[in-house]
Length: 172
Image: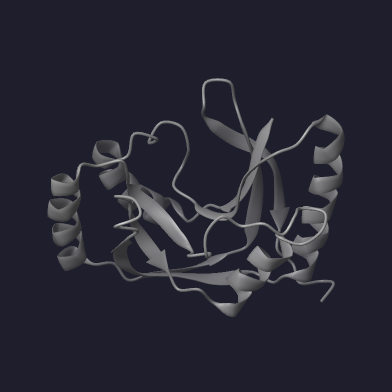
């Protein structure tokens, strides 16, 4: 089964992201707006218990962190994906690093860019048009994230929460 680890922003930021995703993201109905902390990975029932226990330990080592969405950006020319760029704070990067150490595996496909996707899989012309508009509109949103979530993918391709972990910083 496929799993992943994310942080969900507040309803206010989710609503703003969804106002674009409804039109420009074909995965709109499959997952709530989120910031990925660990990309999708495969695990069986036995492995996921150990992984879940390890995520619980990681959550105890990290305090809640500030999520600051500071601008609209794009992964172009790699893909026609638009997103709210999240400032890569030391706290976010530390959680990401912990989620890419044993027993999770150290491989990452791309350099980590904290973000919340708002549009993807657009044509080149649509991407250019929408990106221009959204860059002018901009974003400046701050909030505190106090939990992370282990998700799993259902047979229909949608994602749902397997477990939630409060960031406490109790065991730094």
